[in-house]
Image (cartoon, rainbow, N blue to C red):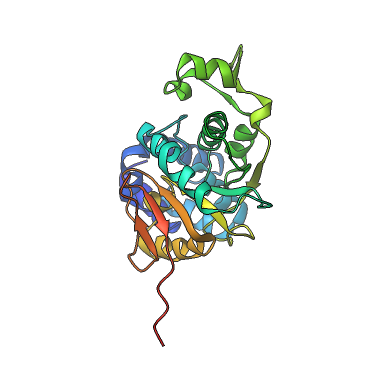
Length: 275
């Protein structure tokens, strides 16, 4: 498949060529294989199939998913989350009788981000005297990667940012990789969800992780529309976390970049006009 054909397929789904440019090789192979399986001789035939067949379109969109991650991806982010963001959030909420801190990992892929947060939370519980429980809504539109996340078995390449002591504490070695310990799986709601076509989960969140998906792989019209919907689910004074190389799609949102790290934003309320 040449790049021009791939561009046409991306345009069909409102995906961004710029976002896929560096990762397109493996994605193109998956799409070309799907075309062959469905008997499409060229891109035009394939686009007609995608338009007429909802199942084929759904499968193609899953094949376009880029699932590249690792534990504690962007180490500086997790240091700031541990030393500043989460302690500040805990300080600002009333712990007495409060429901758990709610976190949404939107586009959670194979679960590395979700389990990283559970590890971090457990480490902070040891360090801080008062930590509320945490509940995480881990959502993705690809059922295969979501099931892999739920199972929680990882190759050593995904764990290279972990110290030997952390690896030993939170994982069990197996013949085919390392399994996250069962006690870290509590409080996680694994949910098949497409944030492009579905509303956010039915509640507000104290922290939303929106890293390396919407803001990277979608065209601006979709990006802006979906971003506004996701922001409705972020609680007042909540935190948004995006990818290290990502920028917000619009300035017309009540978010302020945190001084501690560029990819963490805090929601604020516009001041009420004086009467």
